[in-house]
Length: 329
Image 1 (tube, rainbow, N blue to C red):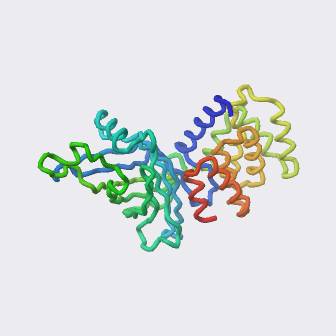
Image 2 (image 1 turned 120 degrees about the horizontal axis):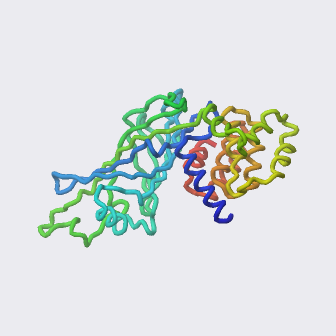
Image 3 (image 1 turned 180 degrees about the vertical axis):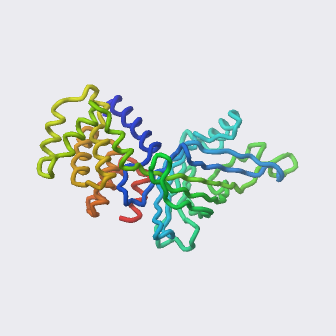
């Protein structure tokens, strides 16, 4: 994939995670809205004080079924390079010397299978930091039931906390003056409190339509060609449409936008072939693999959903949505 296509994929991926997911209206999966989700930490300093901070870039997926609240799960991908304590010099030292972000730029949380979840209100999962994986437990304080936000997009909020021992993950620096003082009093606690407030969103059919409804746009033209298509002539109409090249082919995500619109309306007979056409143009696009996986899942075609899930994991082994689907496929 050339540089222009790669940059376009990155821009579109950013839009997906910030604007909400392209999911059928019956889905219990929610993409994390980074701009309205928080992951904070605090650690005691010299017994009476503390250092606080946050991670500003979290991708993830939440699964929540209000009929089966005990099956709540989450998969998170946390950029350690967005750590912020409010003091840039300290942040730089933490990232370089304590977290070694040159070699370990992300941390991951992945819920364990349902069979290994044993207490309501708690989520056990594998937490990976600096290449070390250990099982931790998230204590869920509150779940705000699915509702509609001000844009009428479905959302759910999950908040809670957990404690980890930083030395379990080699977040330490024995030669640092902050680990021990001259009188051997430890300056920094081993225990770290992590608090989270995660907002998961989907995109409503109305807002998905608004993304393709700009008159004369490539998205709108493809939608007009597809909305009246019968199952028998969808492929022919797609081939005919793409014989006319876009002004900027490397940025033509019309198949993704239109395909995901039909996915939100559960018109899977149109969604699947349109999304597959998009993959012909961008064969390494994670967001289109993701949408194809979802479409087959919604159509109850488990084998096809698994196939595309595995292809997505081959592109990104830590893709949150693929890992959440893997838990149930």
